[in-house]
Length: 308
Image (tube, rainbow, N blue to C red):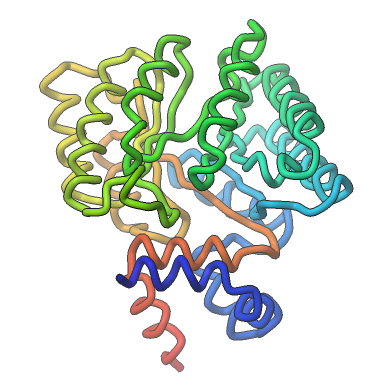
């Protein structure tokens, strides 16, 4: 119920406008968003790298309304890749196709993202672009695009996507991605979907996540397990040990500002950890979805706002 509430808040344009302009809104976002500028994201990335963690940088935004906005979004990602290369950061990028103009001009969106993948592929350090997953109306279009770009031989180590465990279709989608050895970030899912296409109960989502996680770990392809659920993390660790899966053949992934204690502990124990670092002015929908995924974060925010 709380999850549905926060998802609806994420779609409220009036609340979004107020939050993004207010000082209290910026205070709330500070914990979970690196800042509003590339320099903020780079500073956070450097600190996480020093702590033994890799990073995925995401310029927050989706569903742009014109071609200029799409081109500007892509240009910002080019600047991030330039900074990653120049400063030799252990980082890659994550983007949404609608932020690249998918709803405005599909061919332009494809061209913009293909250009970023080509740039990542040319980086000496081995750059990588994660095409993020959005709500279910975009699932097939996103997967079709990733398959298409990945089939260019030079791109095959430089593009991957995200699979959401709450969708019934996800196991079949994983099979098709693994047939082409495409790297996957497995998450539970953050959008409100109907019971016709997604598991409505958390227990069923968790069970499906574990089932899909085992498929990924045995695939021989480098994947990311995106979760803050300690039970799932323990099961992944136990499965990797039992199946003699090397610790450097996959990574755990968590969101910036959430379970930092657990992130540090996994690094100390010798597991790979990547932190998803969002930045930008359009942080409100992102934050609301994060609160919906883990309502305990709302209590954390309230406690911190009440501190002197």
